[in-house]
Length: 458
Image (cartoon, rainbow, N blue to C red; front, side):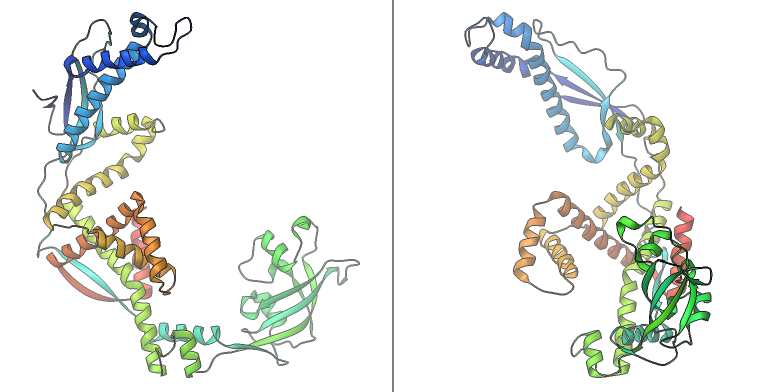
């Protein structure tokens, strides 16, 4: 006779009745009692000499509960493991469960009743040549390439002191003193400020740009640098106050003498610059540099455009494979499984949770259809690839292998990597089964498209 009997309540819920016969635990119960008696040290009795009646009365029920519950759980786990694809969530005690009496003097069969949710039945749809999707390809225009190249020449350029009139890209050093009215305040705060001309506010630019070393300018420190409304930033980086003196009262009006101006001279387009910026020997001409940048930027967006395609495919598949879940059961189970999950919290979060459950069920069918399998060697290589990326291209095989070995001992790390690899495999195969139309799109338009979709999903 089966130890677990399933009875469907409806299409989405069932009860599991678990039987534990007295023959399954009676002998073990007697053996464990005797073992406990022989080892027990109880006040008033020599070790191992306490009467069996005393042992049974005081410790028997707890032992009986443990033995019966373990047998029940063994039967339930074995059944769920064998039929795991039939259920969602985990069994919870049924409201129809009567009182369970554990009587050490009257050994009986035990019956436990659980409620369980059933996996909805559905056939996969929307994965064929009639399903059409757009695969965006980033069009990296010349302006984007030139801006990146210009930034690189500045990054590898030199700064030299200049006596010429101040320009936007110059670095300016100002020795400033706090004012009181139009004159320097007696014992007023002094500070040395260094900042870039292009970071100045419009008012500050009018006062400073075009001046030369030695010029004296007046300014409001709160309106000196763009994007610094934070008082803490101004006090720390412009007024240069010490941490223990941050509350010092300082008049924001200052007068300052320009003591030094350094000007950036961008790097020239020569082999030294190409080697520094792109890697030794990878680029030799300006055209090659532009092609390199165009490829790098395009490659950066490949993952993002692929993720958008995958999301579109997932949304379409979910829409075409709509089905109901055992919502009432799952809400009850979520509340039962975690005491932090109040009914109100579950009700609020359930819509998003149910989307995840539905996709999980659909994904299982998709992985069966496309026979997606993950080998251990693939997980190891995936981890090694991540480590190389973290090390920014440095390749130390011994270090990488030892790190991978350590990560492979962590079940969570292995599961995450396997899921990542499985997701890519699955969507790559789906993409081969549907119709894809490539569409070129500018970086600006793609970013807007991503933002619009994010706003829509909020």
